[in-house]
Image (cartoon, rainbow, N blue to C red; front, top):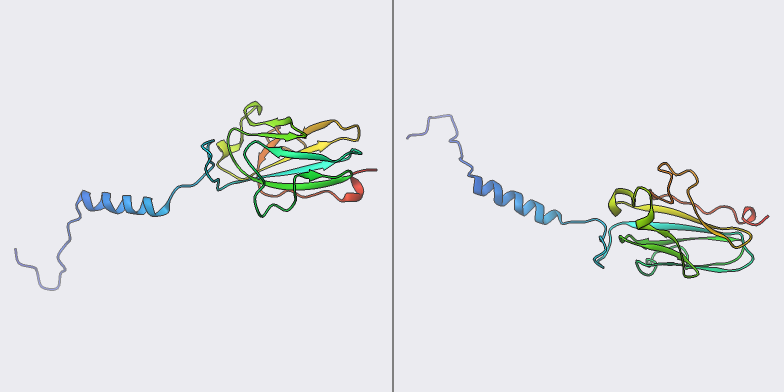
Amino acid sequence: MRPIPGRRPRRVVTPLVVTMTLMLALSACGGGGGDGGDGGESDYTLKVLVVNASADSHTLSYSGGAPLADSPDEETVETCSAIIVWYGVVDPFELLVDGVPIIVSGELPEGIPLGGETDMVATINILEDGTVEADEGDSVRGQAVEAGRNINKPAATGICT
């Protein structure tokens, strides 16, 4: 067949070429997401605020590992103060104060947000009498762990009155 002058010949794209191109594009994008409990690195952060209104210092810990290197605070919260500690998201997990589980992912009524495939925030309050509780506060879903990135410390002068 002779080409018609002034017209470009059509190229035929085979299904094999399309498949190879899609496979290359998908492998270049890579994966991501929470670690799903397999011990790998997580792309998502769990930010935990602990507000201590008691007369004693307390220690926060996380079954998913140590705080991230860029975490704003250490895991010990002194009396009448607050800390924010960042962790890599793993599922399942426990947040503990002085070794006692306070938030257990498997016990959350709706599970962890988006199956751990998102950044999350949680607040734990240590009351004046030393009672420790997970704060559901303004939670949209009515549970202690919510999807989100923003969490702020309260003013130190308002923690112990």
